[in-house]
Amino acid sequence: MSHAEVQDYYGKVLQGSQDLKTNACCSPDAMSDGLKRALSNIHDEVLSRYYGCGLIAPAALKGARVLDLGSGAGRDVYALSQFVGEDGAVVGVDMTEEQLAVARRHQDWHAERFGYAKSNVEFHQGYIEKLDDLPLEEGSFDVIVSNCVLNLAMDKPAVLREAYRLLKPGGEMYFSDVYADRRVPEALRADPVLYGECLSGALYWNDFEYMARAAGFADPRLVTHRALTVENPALEARVAPIRFISATYRLFKLDLEPECEDYGQAVIYKGTVPEMPHVFDLDAGHQIETGKVFPVCGNTFKMLADTRFAPHFEFIGDFSTHYGIFAGCGGTSPFDSLTETGAPASGGCC
Image (cartoon, rainbow, N blue to C red):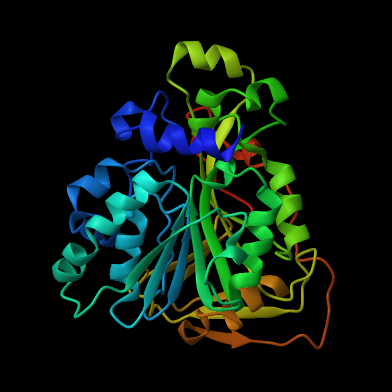
């Protein structure tokens, strides 16, 4: 596969989400009321050219500077621009001229719709593997998002390295993508339809976690995941027996340890994040109830204390005494926790 083939698929073959041949590049219906309100303010043409597989609206974005990798027609950019507010900024990068034309055409429309004096978004045409070719300052972003695009990249480790370089210390990459339960054979990876449909370019989940760590993101955290069904008999037969999931991960630019270590620490959530008044969802293993003392490992402590989340927590303990591995932590396949319905099962601390 090449950049040109992917550009052609998303710029010329697909004219709207109804042209997709599978359900891999479609988000589930379940979303927060806040995200529903944000999407209701977005132009219909932008919504019609959406090909994401997850919901990439992390909490506590007010005033943040956000970068969207593979921003397409701008749906997520315009949703996030409402969460960061007029004092924040959202930058979209995409390689497809036709998609960017849609995004740029409605820039002023959205600023007026949101009640902003001027637009707080901008778009650049370029490759997400070569972000150093664009006017993006190193260490200048609080959050980097991406929605079902890493699987389309020709050089996936380069995307993760560039994201790490562009994040501020304590910043995070919060993104959704498609993953496979095994390495996809090369013959399938060369198929333009399977690749364009976000299937044959999908990483084996364990290879992704290795790449993330190699790029500097020491403790990848799985936030949500769900099974993907292809729902196209011909294409499903071609990829069988490979299983796919749509998963959202968060990666922090922090000095973290390879394992979850126990230092006797705990946190108390104040309930002050507007989107999460009762429970703070850090990841699949950390739903932190408001007002309750919640024991955490050293890495989780840093993810809350050394990031934009710090004002929303009280912190108990330090790193002066080590008690070994934090009980209950350990690496497992996200496929192992899926129920027969395709939904994730509960459990796991980290």
